[in-house]
Length: 439
Image (cartoon, rainbow, N blue to C red; front, side, top):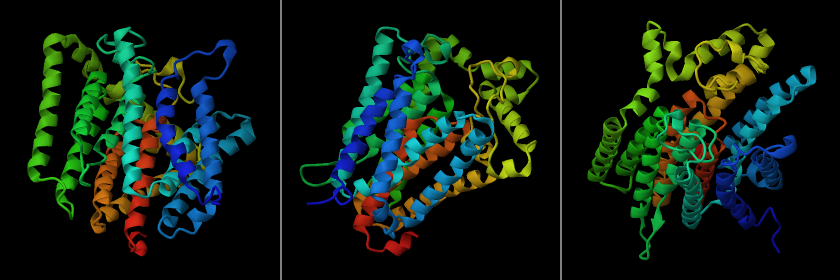
């Protein structure tokens, strides 16, 4: 009889079920609990994070002795340890445990990576990942649909055109939708054994893009367009010609026309919506070109956090700074929306919280993972690996774009990225015996 560490079916079921479960949880953030009780999403996310850690310990020997995944696993362990230093020091010296919440939110998605590598190894696993990703998307879509039918929740940017249902704000909703676009690209198996992007996947991509346009978050719309074009380009340029150049140009033109058509329709039917959405540009002009008004004051936040970081002693610059209460709500002169205490930039967020060492490890972790997937794309001639590598590289580009505006708190998108990344490496290991070529 196989032990738990040998039988990975349980791990696969657990990971697949996380997608629809978290799709429900992210929509309960706005639920106010009686008697000051914690929000269920916060408690259950913490529970699943600890469960991820337990699974990693159960499979620790397999991860440490796997030459294929070991280099990336070391980057993962180093980053997880360094990010913990600042919350520990903050608690030790000030009895402040707020930074632990941020740390465990990061752990909740980064711990998915090694588990996905172990769980997903075959093309059938990729087909399952696609299926459960689509199920999770429809849970999110159902919440949005209910919100617009019954006018529940806020409208995007409070301009009265699109209800977000159970979502607290535009950023997590749009970033989550962006992350789920990768699942629609995942291949589907035909009755004849051919692997292809399904028509239903293309329709879901168009639906997803339409929702992104309705939310009107500019960075995610840009990230979607660029990542989709990159994915199609990679599929046309791979060793096995999966798509023709005709498909690439057709998809690119269709996306651009859909974007232009959607904004033209809004401009004709409700021009005030676009005016309200671009009010940061108006305020910048009124202030004589002060760019700190752009993006609801994000550049002001960047300036403020860098100044705070530079004023710290050398030790804190290296290992991190306590940022609790840094931004006083009464003195946010350039901010006119409800931005919380965060620099709204992932790299600056990590720099301030975990210092130069933390930022260095964070960047190296993602660059190493990107390089690993790119090499898989170049040397592996398995069609499933080519598909998943092109999609994962497109997802990386999406993340790099939205990370400039802050996405570390968008758990579901980063969960999807880590799950796809781990599955990609797992399938590559199964289909390629040249293990040393990826290190």
